[in-house]
Length: 241
Image 1 (tube, rainbow, N blue to C red):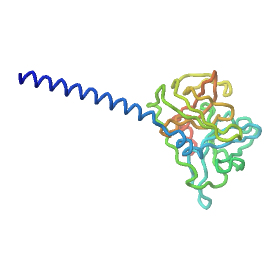
Image 2: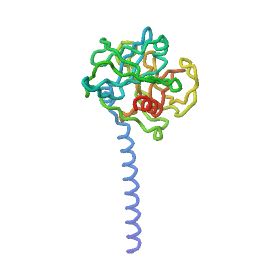
Image 3: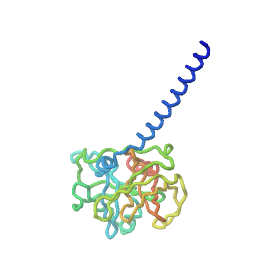
Image 4: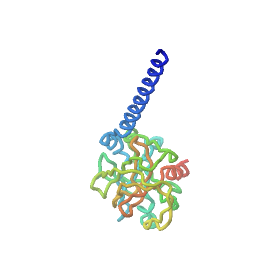
């Protein structure tokens, strides 16, 4: 009788543990999807820059600050080379950028020395005038090794002066080889279900933890394409170091 009771107790304990693990797992999954989109948009809005290069307009991403003695902190801005290509090939090194605090007020940004890489469609600029040091948060770069299909993302851009536009989506594919018509070359990219409308090229895409996963480059068939953050960061570090 005692043996039967002991066996029954062990079975009950096992059932309770299985139910508990299942409930915990479901709770953890629910929590992982509990994102505050509005808070994410608000926290990253100042990292989104409006870019105007002659007749071409697009977006940019404020990725860092550079201290200049006797001047202050200057913003370091990444955008797509194809957005500024026509302007730069005309011999210009300056573009106009508008920050989120004054979206209709343009200031100049200068192409940094050796400041673009056509293989990755990346160009890097530095604002001519100073920017408040705490204007925008320093970006956290996502680890590409942990990027997974189905992961939620949020793309940002300034659609030609109409204000910041965001689009939710998920990662559709990583490390895919695609020919991008506007860039006229095949590149290794991230594909997302977020649409990257005209004017969002050069803007950032973040994961739901606010980490930069890529720079918007274009769209095709309703799907968006990103330059992986790791590639953009490699180009940035080669230029500024």
